[in-house]
Image 1 (cartoon, helix red, strand yellow):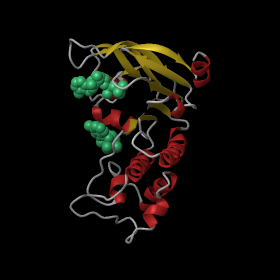
Image 2: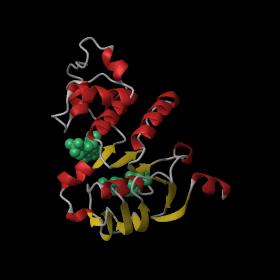
Image 3: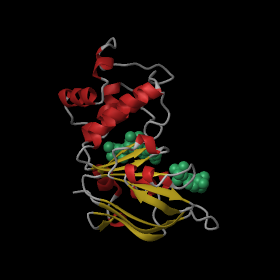
Length: 229
Ligand code: ADP
Ligand code: ADP
């Protein structure tokens, strides 16, 4: 379950400047579709429309045939897990941040999620285990560590649908590769919409949509797009 369909989606923040001019594509249940394109092409806007930070102005977005506008924010957010571009953590323990929204999760479940996101060692090395702390400037974690906390949160939430919004863009190459490996595990068997800058980060996607000037300029597998140059 969790099949997504974008149908003739049109959207503009400013009526004088359309961002999406009729976008149609599907993400079959359990598959991964990547959206690439130049900065400002409207890639993140697509994910915001799916998550309903904004609503489409023409066309529709459906999940398993149901229009997202007919779904409550609460149930939409339980079905969709989002690993945002910049993870902002709460000024609290790492465990709290992983458990966020899932207050009933046991310590063992939180630890398993941390393990899968490759932060378990990191957490164990901290003085009071999960009590990574704090002070007035919040959690003193690097960008990559914050991303891993966000990934662990998503693993714990186990949503059928994932949005990965340039989830590794702010990181150095080595960290990016490690995070990519964790994300590949998370997205396996989940319906996944990846927003990416570069083709090289989405080699394994089942389909790649190239967005340009508000329309789909090209689509295909990584191999097909490379062959066409
Ligand atoms: P991408 O993810 O492809 O870089 P975005 O979807 O973030 O592109 O943005 C598409 C266009 O919409 C950009 O020109 C951006 O400046 C503009 N935009 C994004 N968010 C807003 C907003 N909240 N209000 C007005 N314009 C916006
Ligand atoms: P849950 O449904 O599990 O309680 P949320 O829907 O509140 O979770 O948030 C899911 C993810 O999306 C979190 O990683 C959170 O940081 C991120 N997120 C929530 N609201 C926004 C927002 N307005 N802009 C960007 N990211 C957000």
